[in-house]
Image (cartoon, rainbow, N blue to C red):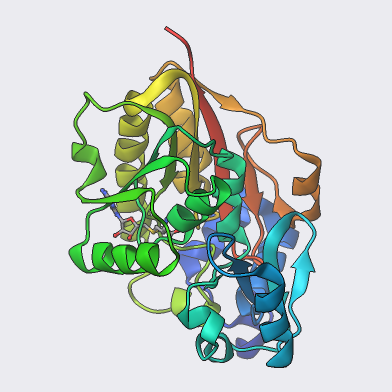
Length: 312
Ligand code: SAM
């Protein structure tokens, strides 16, 4: 018996029954309700200033002059939320057209920050389109790293190329490839695997109720995620670190994938304990040291794990 059975139809905004059951068994009654409220929340628009292009203060002045009142985000100098704006307001700005800003959810900015990419290193972005994180990695390195950005869908790879050019990224090479097929002869100093997933953390309540969000999708996603993560650990240099992330809040796509793959590889979880992570709305995790963000009015649901490949 689930706790919402006595509620009205509107209060339920019927999450698919199988999802409600999964959330209930993973998080319990109170958090399932909090997550449901998060799905219903109207998310604030957020963006990232692009340090590779234009003058920061001039761009902020432009946003203020347009009445969008950007509010800084405590844990990332380049991140801003816009309580008063819709996405279409941002798209009509010259700074958006010029690539001086990139519209990106706050949660989606976390994996590159946690990866903490360094200049003069070889970085693999295994599932890169449309390029929010590729362009952020380049920005964090001041365009001074070498990024191999992989994408298996041709149309999305075109979008990735477009965003890379628009954001002034000069250090990324796009490969149209299924990353599971990457040649084992490659090796990288750091890797981001922002894995394809069911989207259980980012979809709105109504999207979750559409037919394509199914148990089969979750199962298929977790198989692909395991294969991609196994490949990532193969390509990572021993002693180096990578980040695995998804926009799902289901353990099947997160802790279970990481736990299963590292049990078969020479790798370990690197504990995420930076003080600033305490400012995020976090959900409990099954795998200590990983982080799962609860969907709400500011954040999409997101999972992040940092892994280290053990030295030979
Ligand atoms: N990292 C991206 C960003 O920040 O803009 C979002 C990535 S999205 C979650 C996952 C992407 O991985 C999709 O564009 C999808 O087409 C791509 N993809 C799925 N399976 C893949 C595979 N086996 N190899 C490479 N790309 C894949």
